Amino acid sequence: MDDLGKLIRKAIREEVANAMKETPPILEKEIMNVDEAVEYLRFKGYKICKATLYQHTMKGTINFRRYGQRRLVFTKADLDEFLTKQLNNN
Image (cartoon, rainbow, N blue to C red; front, side, top):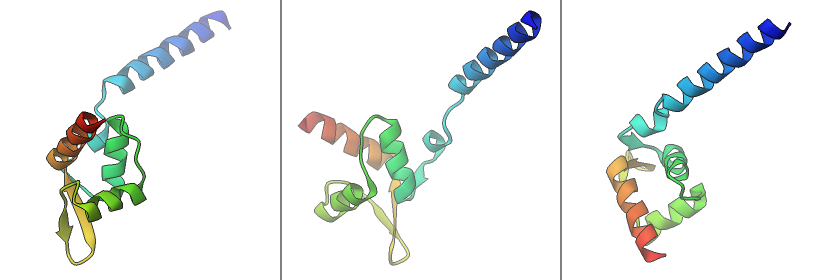
């Protein structure tokens, strides 16, 4: 049993190490919808909810584009610029 436990612990450590090396999929996207933008901002350490993100679009404090008549999309560059402005204002 002791050898089995060691093998299991070793396998778990390796998997965790590999998972930490992988880039989260959200970081690879250049254009994001509202849900993805919230996830991206949270991953970057900025706590925000969808309603607050929508408020920023209405106030004009974050750049976005419309896809069709109603769907909003954000570029990674726009989200990073927004983060920089928010961090500088606080």
